Length: 349
Ligand SMILES: Cc1ncc(COP(=O)(O)O)c(C=O)c1O
Image (cartoon, rainbow, N blue to C red; front, side, top):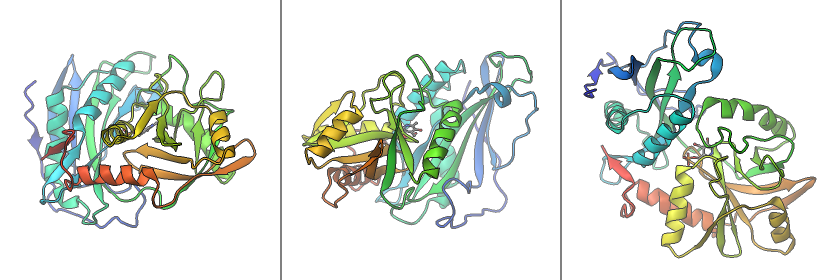
């Protein structure tokens, strides 16, 4: 299809300051919608943010064909707006859609939907240097039928919300060895709704024990670290940045990939490989300065303060000179246009 996007403007713009409200609660004025029918995308439009009308028979409400992305736009140093790594987010979106038997979204439609929406709602960009617009492209199966089947109809939507700091303090996490998030051959690498629904219960149990998050382990040995909540897990031990390899059970995180690129560019030794909690115990017991952090679009770099393994809590290094902060600052500078975009990650709109 030609990407003619019709725009129906909100009559009264309603920018509100959302700094004190929880993440993701306040949408901007508009949203993008396109429909998939008879094998083609049609009726692409930007409309005032509004509720959807769905039949109770809509397949997404029953069998979990839902896929989403999460990306950010930043006000850059010269007053324009950068969308960060749109190409990689689009690529991952289509990979997730493929795994869930859902139709791909052409790059031009994805890019236009995002850029036009963000241009229209640019007033919602937080003035804070730390603020950004969080962008949520997503797709749901809308065919009206209660039988278990792959849907023939879909809605592709994009909404946005102002975003500020995600976690206010370093995290207290536990190594999860009873429950798993994903297994070989499963959907762990897709950003589909079911992965998150299935992770809630163990995370809730961990919260009741006083932890902020769990660090998932592999499904076979319950020993090798996978990832955490909505973040990839990264460690800096004895001058090496270590992160679990993309084995097919974890998300191919854009922040993870970006931090690895920045680290390599700066001559930091990087290892993408399996890392077991026994290796962590050994490092802690040998007195190594272990940095541990989550990497994700929403939280960016979330320092981990303590990792509880079994009944023992191990303290990680969160001193201001930790490498994770150097990496986070370098990423921040590129996204904001304070440093040259040497990796070509920003799309200026
Ligand atoms: C399960 C999971 N892992 C990792 C990440 C980090 O990915 P990204 O850096 O692309 O946001 C996310 C967030 O998108 C996630 O939901």
